[in-house]
Length: 315
Image 1 (cartoon, rainbow, N blue to C red):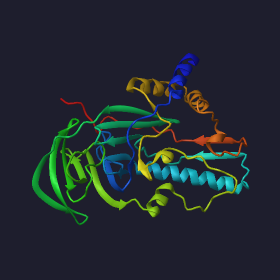
Image 2: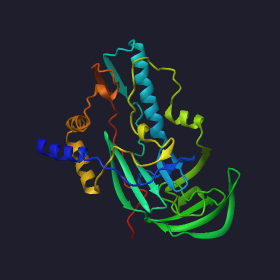
Image 3: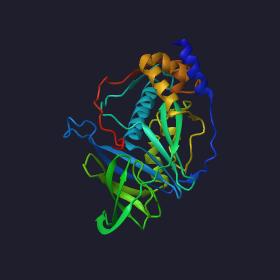
Image 4: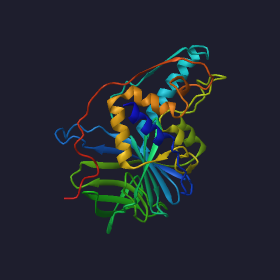
């Protein structure tokens, strides 16, 4: 196991830089994802809010619910530090929710035909894949979605028959998940079995107020002298511009599978190794004051059946 950790450590340290040009973040669109993940329990569909950050030639897709959870955890930590007079000796990180959220993010560089998947295992890892584009058939059928006149398009893509409704007046060729390549912004999409649905929630321009909401920065719990370290994916969210995270490592899908295998066999040893590669311990995840503390993390142990991914093999 130690030998495996050292080989994985080499992957962690191998930080890559990427030549993808950054693109200014102009707006966001949010969707309600309804996904039948377990075909033996089709009525047990737990919705998840997803968000797409939009640039002129780029897009970034992630879980909005995961962003909100990260904000809640960070605010809980800030409150504990505040209650301990800014000199904390112990911190509890309690994730009480058992609802699963999407843990993989997508970067699209449409002009360059580049596509990256990002997954966080303490460190960010990037897998580059071909940018597959659906071959849409655009119809003459239209309907209103939140006062937007949208046009219907259909395509066979990634093992499913998709219907998408897009707004040709929006200057973005993007949408939820891996759906793109239409002359406008996709407002709604679903497959013919209704196992996967993306329903429009909101479209907002990227304003200072929207950035503050996404960061969760109301400054109510700020403690002088204590600098918080961002948790989860909040440190790489494209508030200002869409670009690949600077400290991410580009690896293959096979290498990522090995990392996950090591994590599942020995979670504690894996995370210690990952953090050591960044010169961190559990205390430095929370503050940069140099003061050591005890950190206790609690995550509900709940197993979920997941036999119906969005992307299916072609028959």
